[in-house]
Image 1 (tube, rainbow, N blue to C red):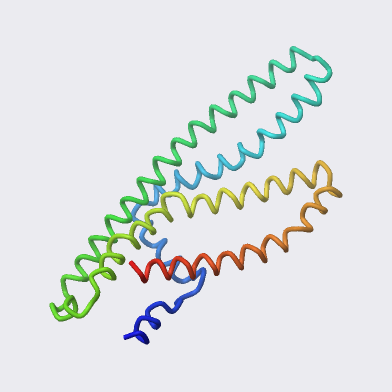
Image 2 (cartoon, helix red, strand yellow):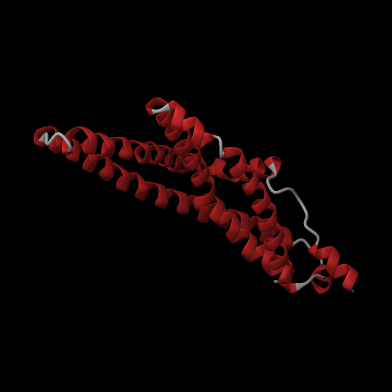
Length: 208
């Protein structure tokens, strides 16, 4: 019994499985338009987030310091326009990403229920109730969070990093290279925490 429990607790699968991820994305094909709007919104949000600090730097260095009130007003209005666009695209992103996640979850639950309905009663007698509930409820909700926030946040963060890196190199490439020197340490630390988090998640999931 103890051996079986240890076997169930064994960590399985990769931290990131590309083949499984592509299979998961196939569920979004049915909702291409919503996926496109959410993806476009998150791309624009990443660009606006990178533009704001540049505008703020110009306002402080060129106009507040030099007391140029006319140009300062123009840049303040421009900053407000950028913030307004951010609010609009943030709303579109939240709405379409969550709509997409919930509808994909609905499709997966229907498919899962149809799949389970073909099983014999003996399977349900021999299977743990907690395991079935985890598959049908908890795991599906995790997938919803991937489409609702996770996937698009990854795209957004990657775009922000690339745009910010480009701006840093343009403004001061020597200082930018010093900052980039710590990236290998951050990547290494992320790998370690990623494995530890997967292990902890698997243990909690098994206990449930």
